[in-house]
Amino acid sequence: MRAADVLVETLTAQGVDLCFTNPGTTEMHLVAALDRHPAMRSVLCLFEGVATGAADGYARIAGKPAATLFHLGPGLANGLANLHNARRAHSPVVNIIGDHARAHLPLDPPLASDIAGMAGPVSRWVETVVDPGEAAEKTVAAVRAAYGPAPGVASLILPADCAWDENAPPPIGAQDMPGRKPVAESTIAAAAEALRAAKSPVIFLGGPALGEAGLRAAGRIAAATGARLVMETFPARVARGAGRVSAVRLNYFAEGAANDLKDADLMLLAGARAPISFFAYPGKPASFVPEGATLHEFGTAADNLAPALAALADALGAPADPPLAPRATAPAIGNPEAKLNAAQVGLSLLRYLKDGAIICDDSTTSGLGVYSWLENGPDHDWLCLTGGAIGLGMPLAVGAALAAPGRPVISLNGDGAAAYTLQALWTQAREGQKIVNIVFANHSYLILNVELAKLGDGPPGAIARRMLSLDEPRLDWVKLAQGFGVEAQRASTVGAFDAALEAALAADGPQLLVAEV
Image 1 (cartoon, rainbow, N blue to C red):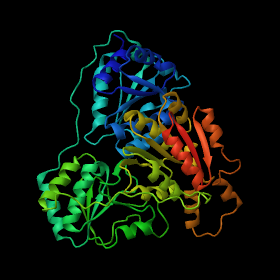
Image 2 (image 1 turned 120 degrees about the horizontal axis):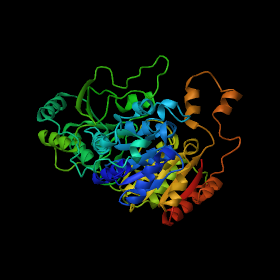
Image 3 (image 1 turned 90 degrees about the horizontal axis):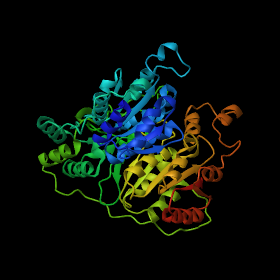
Image 4 (image 1 turned 120 degrees about the vertical axis):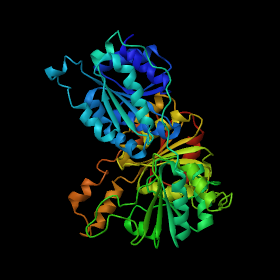
């Protein structure tokens, strides 16, 4: 059996049955193997950054890895930004990267590169198949590494001559995979003692603590101790909506973050690291931890935090049910001709979104304007831009929709971010995905304009304004979407957007709405 077939069969035996692909010549034996093994679903992406973002979105919702297939180092390099986001999200992903045949590499062909060196910074595990006989073994190792205990990105490099070798040992069947570790009883007891002693505790939540069960347990702890619940600014996935416990989303800017954590004397870290600023600023501290507060680590992304938080609530004698806010309803539209803004987009989503939705947010400033309106709306999962590398929203939605085909999927995108990976629209159209893409068209890198203003150097000059403007010429998102096979509409008023969103959510196939804000 060819090693390429062994690799594909071994992947599917481990439950990895979806591959986002953008192959080249060195991967043709893998393409043929995928053709022979329909148990592995193959999804073509026009750009590798779409494939990596989609694999991230799939992992966040499915809780298991998808595979990717890339052409040599340059193909991998095209996907690195969204692998960076996946690494920060602790998303399990298995990259399969083709390489030149082993005897061909010393000739230094044009596409030769340091693939392992490129993969290393975004991967928790990188290996090369150096002999066809180890294809199955290293494939299992890659999947195991992706699972954890702290999930992450694993990258396996397969030389072309290893792929085409016909004498590889047989595939390996299903193996047990690692899971997150239980939190020790002594850790739970120490946390209970620390919370009892604190006067103004904050439970700082992230990662696996932000599922519905983890938040419910945290809400019980808050009810018993008076602790404030605060979560990291850009979580990989957080369960939200009526009937679920809400945590304050830590403010992006230092002044707001200081207010969110004001007077805390204890910060219990549950799945999140101690909070810091996204960037350094002259004369301002990088840490958001209040002066004098004690940091107490309860668990990390490698730990099974939901049952541990429930055990902590029990140890504190917390009530069985946390207090919950009633379900919110959107008010009637006041003036339908009013100019559209992010808050009105949030209200329209509150009005029409059904339970079970998934929201993939790559809209930075505008997304924050939408976020608060859905806090007690329909139940949904909100997926954030974990690593700050924009261009994730539409690809993330591709993967999320494949992981949960019956659930409504919304992507929120800044126009600058969407331009990075708009090729995702083609994959959405090809796969017939029910995704509504919202592009906030403010025709600038708005967050960078905010950051520039914070320098205090006065109004920006013409050169600076031009570097941060997307207005010369304006991107025509309706035509761009239609060119990739996606229906699109533009709205600049509250009434027009509301009607467009209602129609888009009811439509079959992907839709794009341009929100002129």
